[in-house]
View 1 (cartoon, rainbow, N blue to C red):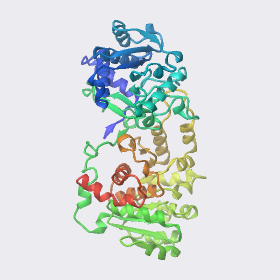
View 2: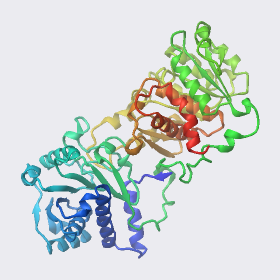
View 3: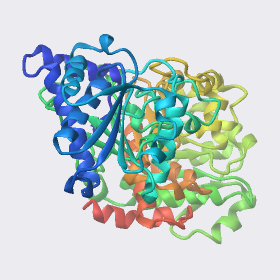
View 4: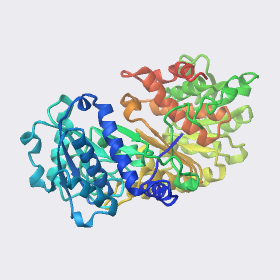
Length: 544
């Protein structure tokens, strides 16, 4: 697992390194600037082959200081460089001021205004690189003053894809994005990309920030490259659990290796029931497809036995479409209690295609009502919507049970947590903005169980504040996952892992990661039925 940092955490790491005497702020700025140049030449090797022309837009803080370093290094490489400054040079922070003066010994600095940049790309067609060093991770207010600058850079960013305009590179994060939340400050009620800067490449340092993976951040960043600046000596373990955010990138990383997937749990000695028995509750005849998808997902991911519990009128329909998956008649709550008398059933899934009335009756029973022994349970879809008018009733059950995973999409989340969702929708006028991580942590604490808030930037949190993000962006982008039934398969994946005795948090994290891996394995044209069938290939690639 990699950790995604907040702006405050990054500042604390830098300050700790400086106070230790191992590095100075000026040296960190120099390393950052060199990292940007390296990243640019690695991304576009042809730019390193000979001299070109660049425009560097610097801001009033240390991000601008990084920009002056880049300008100087490109000039030393033989480039023609034009530099603009937004703000008063006399008010620059000390290290940025030093690099401003160093650049002044090599070239001019013009004021950054709308008038200076409007039409710049057409007036200077030889410019191949535009560097956004205006605002970085420290941005705390909307970037409203330079509308034409934003428009021009966005035009360049789009046109550069066919070589028509300069490539746009942002330092740390595109100006205007809150690095803690990925939200464009001040623009949430409009299309933020009409106003704020979008980059072809974003170069950040030491570690990705949360805004690189959340909300609009991935769309604004283009591609993110992390460059080391010598901060590995700083120990991050001092951060509290509730302040840390894990991010799954590579299964071979510590904490997310094949052993994390439970090699021993997959191949332990025993029979099918020792590998777990998952029960997926289904809706009436004609509504069973979602539950069958979930059941298939649970079986493929490793549950030893999976049973679909359906009303009597749906038995024939399900029997005609299921082979390895067993069937049980589960009509009303009493029938569910009878089925759950079998203590070999150790994980439940309720919601996919269940129906609202049926969910309202069966969820309380599944969560321990009427003397039923509670099992680890996934609540999805109708099992969430059924309690939108009275979420506190559900939370009393989940807080008592605790071994529950809620898997809402944005609409279901708003139904259960309307006040939290409202905060997430409100236009952020200052930073750090309220983020999806904040919202999911608050929801998990209120519900007393794990919450997996779905999306391309899926966030998973438990009641104790632990949180992780599963980002389907950049090299892991899988837009074809937006297909009917994919969420039902995810619910089944989690249920199957719960049956293999994964903890709720571990099951949710692992299932979300595998869900994206399956989509990437298949590629465009994916439908939900394809997802479980990719698991064997994914497992083989992981040597599980």
